[in-house]
Image 1 (cartoon, protein in one colour):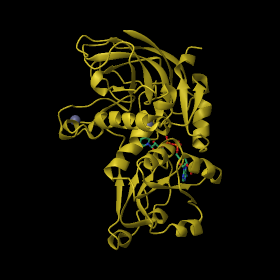
Image 2 (cartoon, protein in one colour):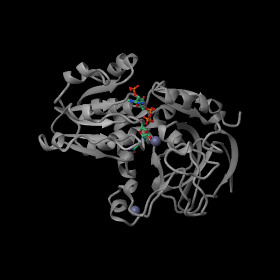
Image 3 (cartoon, protein in one colour):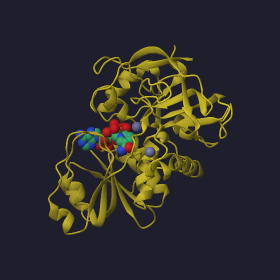
Image 4 (spheres, protein in one colour):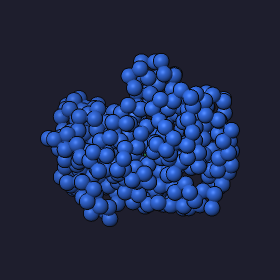
Length: 350
Ligand code: NAP
Ligand code: ZN
Ligand code: ZN
């Protein structure tokens, strides 16, 4: 067993606090990773506060994990001790369904095993995430961090990066396409960078006027204040694709109006309050679509990391000590994050 230091939620309302537990010893196909950095995703907050349903406590969140391989099982072929690797939102799946066979493990028909909040098949115990100094994962669910990517700033690519890269590819963002991004947080700022690197024009929708300058620096060609009707009217009927990263309830009608014929609004945010869907005619008269997308599979996650290395893309981060995680959550709720908190795991036992 591997003794592991962590920060865990002990209830839906208490602040996260230090906790120790044991990881399984690596099996033949497992790598053991010394975690160096872990990004802080809004999904961590939704989960530990019970917004997505009841969970088991203590719960260690964190699914934007980067670290180095310190041990490996006898059958591991892809990674060796010392390799810099990443783990995202998935640590297992059924491996046999149509989605798994297509490398789309996030849509596993048997249900994937989440990096936290799932049940570890090997032990029957709850999976625990990356706000911790060690993790043991089957090599199939591990990706390689290309040389040249700063490991702290690359950590958010494992969720925020792949969650935005995958729909940009699926809906063919590229030259000649106009892509809207709603919300400039962790996901949103990656969406802006990635869509721009793919050659698309990017329009950022925000509720925070003070983020306009940053949005342009990150690659947006236009910034629209989404609560201002005149601003929204200015971009009516101009967009091919919108990635909506908003974490809270909001109105979809004004966003649908900014799509042109055949445009698609892709919901990425995890708010659980049902959306008020616009009337059928909004869709009927211009063949518009409302869609959703979940993170990305393992092959596409590796493709995204290689794309980021080629284009020099990482996340804009604020590196924090583990003890500051609760303050980071409160700031995230106020949209006050520029643009992803990353925990320096070396501080976890301090
Ligand atoms: P985040 O950093 O907190 O960013 C969310 C952004 O949404 C905020 O920065 C803010 O941007 C905007 N926003 C917040 N409240 C709003 C409101 N009431 N009305 C309009 N805009 C609002 O969160 P994140 O980590 O990027 O995650 C975003 C959401 O995606 C979360 O719900 C998360 O659970 C979900 N998620 C989904 C997937 C997936 O696979 N689909 C993966 C990861 C995360 P402005 O200040 O610019 O308005
Ligand atoms: Zn996430
Ligand atoms: Zn499957």
